[in-house]
Length: 471
Image (cartoon, rainbow, N blue to C red; front, side, top):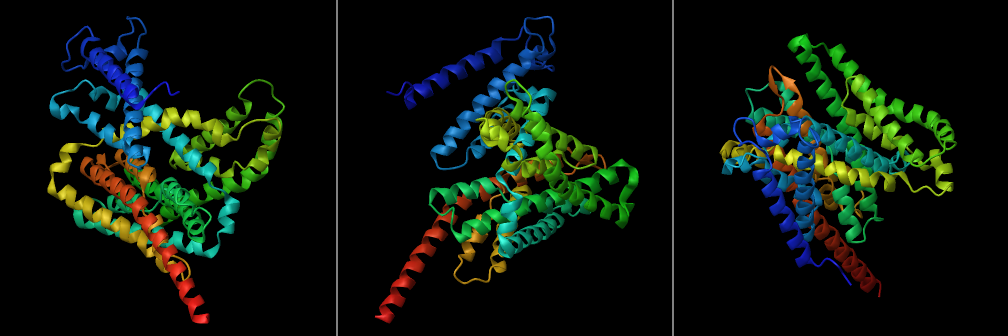
């Protein structure tokens, strides 16, 4: 018998929400003025709990919002990440209704650090789901689809940025192009699993190309962010072609070096780890790989997420098979509870950073519409890389459309990068990117299902016609 029915769950959530509002309204000893009550609670070390109280309140709000939003969107067949993002947008803009109590959470440094850890764990998970061996197996078709799926959206995004932001630097336009390059593997994979097509030729091409897309997208991100950082550090607009070449080489060498060196070092690393006693040794040593490569990536001028992705990519089960023989669960299962806690913090905060007031600006909505069109058309060009007439080329193009979490990560990094004293991704541009991410994520599942199922009917009818002709 189910203890929690849907009705009881809703009542329980309502009670929690009432307690939360009560705590926000009456929990602080002072009125909410220029220094919000939550901020006071964070810095009031004299009270019971000290500075941890503000953090606890922030986590209560964010995790509750994340789970309610995720549940709501999953009931409509949409990814939970969209629910986390949208509800984050709503609570982040309560100030438009005169409710300012949640504003401090946008600027809380501890929550920001937790969100950064969340995105590192997320990219680590994406890397774990990928495999260098599998990429080698997918062949030239996936590689060509990936190349088309990165190059065309990149230049389309660059052009859209130049069209709508002519006064901005060329590096802002390039960064906007970079946000359109990567593909969200998880959303497409879920659709393919739902309709039983995960082992089809189209699925293998899409998933193989999406992984290569992620690598190329991260390299582009590292290069563009590196160039902007170099310019911002005093080199001016006169950054040399040699410096740009070095940044490109550094990004490629880091990922290739991690794969090559990791394949040699990790077996010895885990042979040492397996001798240690105590709980959680396997998980701890895997996280050490993730955090070490993330740190090294940051130290050489790349985004830490590049290192996290590379760490997941090189952790092959062959390296830690002795842990598995001892009965340890896979690293994918062990990392999941950490991701369940940290990753929603990132997406809710990303939503909170969206200024809904910018949606009232016609130019921002127009920018978002054209950017979304460029994102969709850019990935449809992928179908031109498939020459096999038996393969559903339209489905491959549709499967490459969703930007999901990757687009948000790029936008979040751009919002923190400074160029000429202001963010590379402004509030308006950030809102346009969020709209693009939401639309591309929403349209892909139904469009991909229709295309693949229609392709099945077409192939069945063609088979029937050929059989009838032979008879």
